[in-house]
Length: 286
Ligand SMILES: Cc1cc2nc3c(=O)[nH]c(=O)nc-3n(C[C@H](O)[C@H](O)[C@H](O)COP(=O)(O)OP(=O)(O)OC[C@H]3O[C@@H](n4cnc5c(N)ncnc54)[C@H](O)[C@@H]3O)c2cc1C
Image (cartoon, rainbow, N blue to C red; front, side):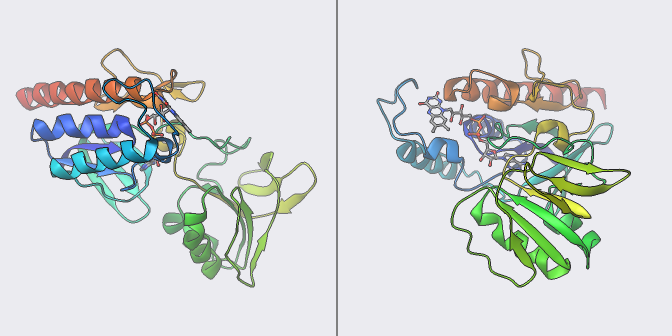
């Protein structure tokens, strides 16, 4: 079992991982080896100490060099669920399930808006994980709201199972072409149904569907962790970054404004120390 599972590879996750590595903790780090689009896209960063008008690209490169020099490795998987199991956690991804004594959420904030009904129908026709839930929609009709081109292979996988896929791409240059995949323009407004999902409604049209998949890099914290206290979409934390779930900590943009590197780095560091303290206390009590 891992001492800590870090979810997210932005600067909050990097900061937590660096400190936990110095304390020789057994870490599983889930995220992207490209780190975060939000770092890469920054034109010039002018408010981070010691870096003078550095570009996002240069910042990412420097972080990647540091991560590799410290012997840290990112497991390139997206967490799809975090389950508190008493004194430990199970974290599921599209491929695997991992066990950790503690978890740090450093998932950033979603740039895409959620659709009304997304939370309500989660597990009743709404899914974030093609690999985990795709088989439930064999020969059925589904909609896939996809925010990133690099998730098209997951759409393709769903199309190999479903009878019909309505692809709602929230990106440009769709390259996927398959007989049973129909591209639909626009942003869905609401998901409707009774016990399960029945319809995906747009301003100007309605799709009759058995399920809706949302394929995106960041999943809202409340959808990722059942029972997690959030406010206005942000995780509610104490000063030590602890949440209302013992052993679960959160850092960076996902805990609220200001959305800034320095704040995310600071909270990542505080979360790492809170994890160390939590582990020490629990080991003593066992
Ligand atoms: C264009 C742009 C320019 C900016 N310029 C500045 C600036 O000059 N100065 C400044 O202070 N701030 C700036 N910011 C804000 C800054 O980028 C954010 O505050 C910072 O990146 C937050 O870091 P984070 O680690 O909390 O989250 P993020 O950087 O958003 O990283 C979160 C990471 O976690 C991953 N992730 C999410 N969910 C999961 C999951 N379920 N499983 C696995 N991985 C997951 C995401 O894919 C992402 O890689 C800028 C933002 C943008 C968009």
